[in-house]
Length: 254
Image (cartoon, rainbow, N blue to C red; front, side, top):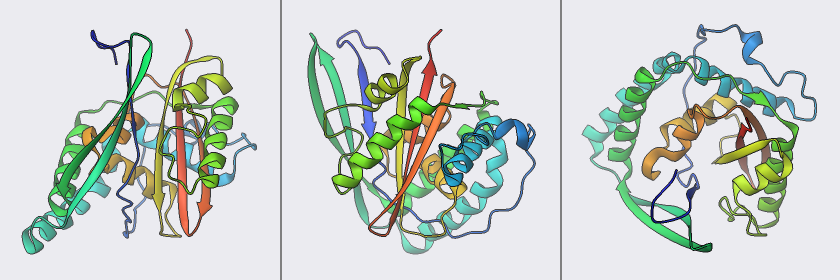
């Protein structure tokens, strides 16, 4: 996004609330055929789980309202917990913002406090509202360069105990890595999510990022639902009992 006071503002947000979802997800009917959404099926440079993640991202983009059947029961449960147990424990999230003023990089960290039960209800309500309004979005195509960017950052994170957020140890941002490894892209962005539940599926992670409870502005949600993206790649890794996902999105040059 553009600002009159700075050259460009890009926000890095890390999913700090590592929620786990324990529920059975029913089968659903999508607006497009499964074949047309499975754009990475022949991309054998990706692991099967990574191809399945792209499939799931395309599912929610092709028919956002189809996910309401998962989210309404979650909202009902969250509302019950809020009424029964109160606002919940106090927690916080960090937003890392990099701005450029007169070609000089300026980094800022903002802390946002919230109550867990209260925030979960708010996040689910806003998500349900967003998905009801959201029209079908473009189906994303896989890209090997973007995959290399995601892989680079995953390896970097492994070496640094997954504390790097979105900025690499070399100072690179997600858009730096994506446009470097895939020069046909004009811009890109990144989601990162972790979960300690071994059985968490691609759909569980997509829902986790869509809900985005505790993240100011629900940046991961809007990354997933951003109409500007044309390409995608995903990388998964296991580190010290946690399953970590990197989702990288790219916008192809015109």
